[in-house]
Amino acid sequence: MVTMRIVVFGAGGVGGYFGGRLVEAGHDVVFVARGGHLDALRNTGISITSPRGPFAGKVQATSDPKTIGGADLILMATKAWQVREAAAAVQPAVDSHTTVLPLQNGVEAAEHIAEVLGAERVIGGLCRILSQVTAPGEILHVGADPTIVFGELDRSSSARCREIRDALSEAPGMQVEIADDIHVALWQKLLLMAPTSGLSSVTRAPLGVLRSLPETRELLQRAMEEVVRLAHACKVAVDPNAVAATLSFIDTLPPESTPSMHRDILEGRPSELESQTGGVARLGRTHDVDVPVNTFLYLALLPLELAARGKITFAT
Image 1: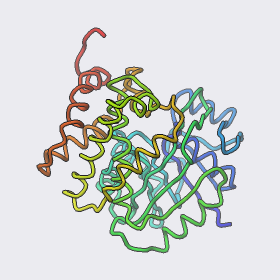
Image 2 (image 1 turned 30 degrees about the vertical axis):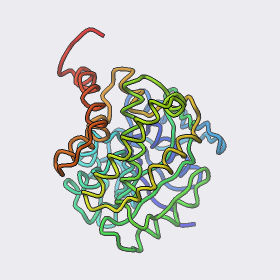
Image 3 (image 1 turned 60 degrees about the vertical axis):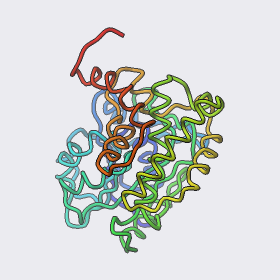
Image 4 (image 1 turned 180 degrees about the vertical axis):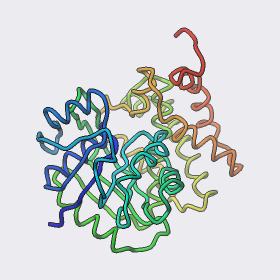
């Protein structure tokens, strides 16, 4: 096994799970976190509860990337709207051989990181998992096979992607894939996340309800079809059959599942609205593609998002 020096920037449900599994595999992992979560990671370590098996162990954690030194790999696991700020903050851990792998929802995270750290440092990436922090230092994985997918943004085959795949594949409780075309993979995930996050947030309903009611299932399908049309306008060859495949995947998830955007909005926190549902609406305008369902969901949620960010105030 090749041991890597890995920085996990953001130790929430995503970063906490994958970072913990990489610690379990024996990699040299440092979490960048803050607040009570940071204190728990430093003092008691991390605890993962998962259908793929539990893990608990001591970990390295800091709030200051300047103390880390050069990393082989940086897993960017913040919320999508925090990416530019996180890229600037983690710069002290980037040296000539560092690769940055973003795991955010949406299709623009790698571009935002490249603007700060340089395109040569970044590969495209995404993850599949339903997980959340249940208490400081405690991660609950509730659904979906934990998977990291990545690839070069120019769609080439590279030695660094193969090295990362081989190293990360040693970790238990997770799968690792190199995408044939990371742009297709990113848009296929947006096809899942934007419609489910938007509709779940508007209705306050879990996925089991959305998929079982004919009316909301039809709305999901229409919103997904809009994303496919938009992907084609962006020169990304998403298979139209991905809509049916995505609906079938949603049918396999625990009925009580909710997207993280739903939970953030429900609890009055800033969310990934602008990169998910809002991203579809914005790119639709840019490319002159009509996306009425996604646009309605975005506009319906915008007042709550602005309130969460302190830009407007109203009674709820």
